[in-house]
Length: 263
Image (cartoon, rainbow, N blue to C red; front, side, top):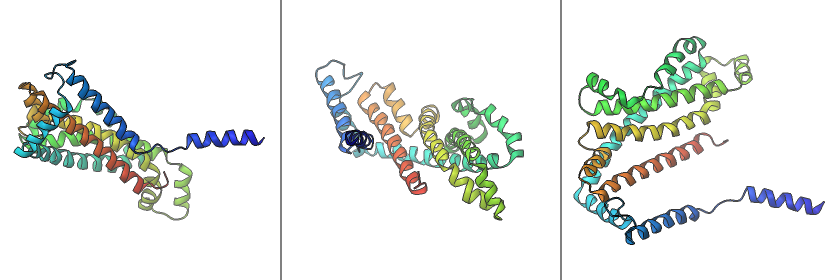
């Protein structure tokens, strides 16, 4: 009996074990070393895959010239406004559709009919509406963020236990308090899943929009150096996008821990 208990304890300890932080660092370091080795041995020509040291050197030159910051700031401005606008509208309208049966019946079919349309295909039309400038790029990012956040918010609201809602109403809560104290906290985990999904969509649309209709930005920089076949500077832009995606994800995880401590 004691042996069985010890076996169970060992299994539980194995499942609950914490992986040290340096494990992730070791994985990335190993990948970079392997990458550098492949390039140093000329297994892949530098034109097709520049070494990490060559990319770092190119990035340092671009920092000194101010080129990297100029493009980065342009992209951060677009994705910041686009993401904030799309996420805010997505959460508000998702709550309305989830809470109101009339709004659900009227507008949900419209949402699901528009959602499958590739958003980048609408960029020429948005440029026609808003003209050439920052607004079309912000709008296309906001549109891409809006739908996944809306759909996840709607699903989160629908997944809230109806007994909790009825109990709140029974104890005299008005519609606003029911949404604020019952529906929104219950839907937050699903909403954050939508926000994380929308972050990847926002980066994708940012790069696509900048490649099509922008003079500055990370996407425009990647396209420019791709056309010139300067792959070390091209890879600077690609790695910068990867870093932005990582920071986006970490930031949302931190915010999720703060707003949903019970999760």
